[in-house]
Length: 216
Ligand code: SF4
Ligand code: SF4
Ligand code: SF4
Image (cartoon, rainbow, N blue to C red; front, side, top):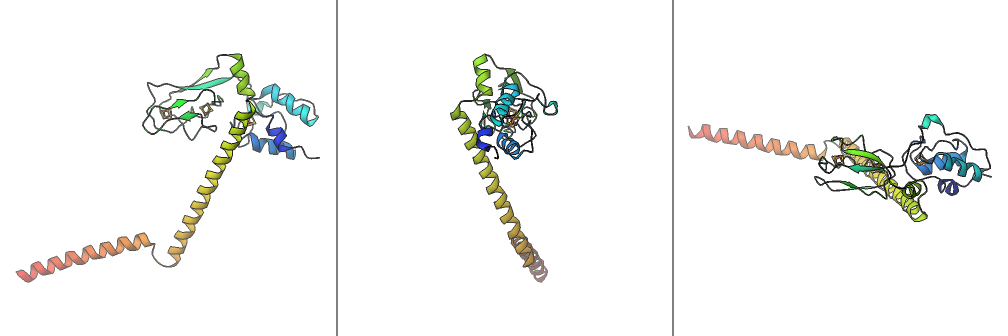
C-alpha cells in the first residue's frame, strides 16, 4: 500500500527551505510516498527525522545524504537595524513569512517563525542579515519539531502562496491572450491611441504653419 503523504509530511520540520531538492516539505513528502526519493534528504531534520520516517515506513534508517548538505546548529536570522534601508528584497525570499516590514521602513524577523533557513541572506543588497545560533535547547527543539498549530499554519501559508501564484499565472495568461487578440485584429489599442494622438499633433502643427503663411 502507498504510504500516506500527510503522515510523511507531518514528520518533516516544515522549514520549506528546499535543501532536500524539492520545492518544500510537502513535495518532498509526495516524492517519498511515490518511492522516488529516499528518506535521508532533509538536513534541518537530521537524524531525528530520518529515524521517524524509517520507523513510519518500516525501513532501516540511512545516513544523511551529503549531497543535500550537512546538519547545522539551529539558527535564527537577525536584521541589523542600523543598515536596513527597507528595500523589501528579503520579503519574498522567506518561505515562511517570518520577515515583517514595509517599503522604506526597517524590516524585522519574527524570531519564533524563522526557521533559520538562510534564504533571505543572499537577496539583501546591504548584507545586513545574519544567522545567529539559537539561545536555548528548547527553542532549538521547537524549531526542529514545531507544534501542530505552527505546522498547520505553515501548510495554510503554503496553500495561500500557491493560490497567489496560480492567480498570477492565470492573469498573465489572460493578458497574453488579450494582447494576441488585439494584434490579430490590427494595432494594439494602446499603440492605436498613441498614433491617433500623434497624428492630431502633426495636423495641428501643419495647420499652425499654414495659418502663419496665410497671414504673411
Ligand atoms: S525542511 Fe527538510 S523536507 Fe522541508 S524543505 Fe527543508 S530540507 Fe526539504
Ligand atoms: S527570516 Fe530568513 S532565515 Fe528566517 S525563515 Fe525567513 S528566509 Fe529563512
Ligand atoms: S533586503 Fe536587507 S536592506 Fe532590504 S529590507 Fe531586507 S534586510 Fe532591509
